[in-house]
Image 1 (cartoon, rainbow, N blue to C red):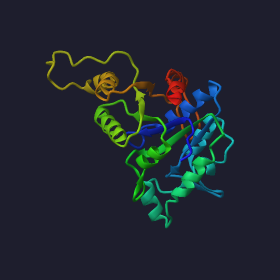
Image 2: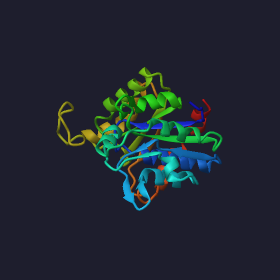
Image 3: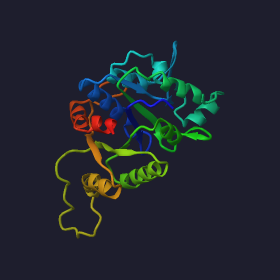
Image 4: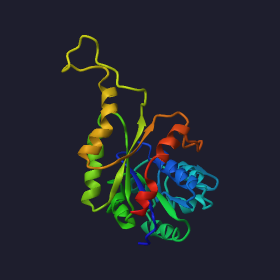
Length: 258
């Protein structure tokens, strides 16, 4: 497979904000003077227009990277149902054309200094019955950035994803924690409650302590902590100022150089 400097953005699950994070990284690299291309190998949940199936994720990524490529080039495989690609393909009477993905990626060679690739679902999401996202990540051989949620339960999801990636021989560059509720110190337990009793503020405390837990237990770097921000909107192709600031603090150029 053609080697292009870049990043592979995956997540612990669908809906964790991979597209927002990938777009923000692409925009920050553009602001740093890099020429950037974006690539969404497979997109599901696409809307149908008179021009065919359109991926909002691809539109958002293109806007963030100032890409002049067509949306068909950015997202070579597009399906209407918001399902795993192999299921979406089967339900619409289509096959998953893996060669179209490889051809699309090869066309990025020499087109930019950096490519930001955003996966679909998580690493074990099946693109076809026998070829999963983790296999594609292995072939592209890019540093992997894992996007995770901030709230209770994310330690398990994130450590499982890190383990799966490393078991496949992928280089995990680090983790981006998304939708962090940055409202200061965690609220205290209910007055008069014993320390070993449940508290309605336990989820707040989990959010506050999760970054350090993931860094230590996952033996990885938390590259950025991105706040919950209403201005982040894929459909409107907007990013909030706080999100851009937090992502801009990440060591993206160093990771790409590695």
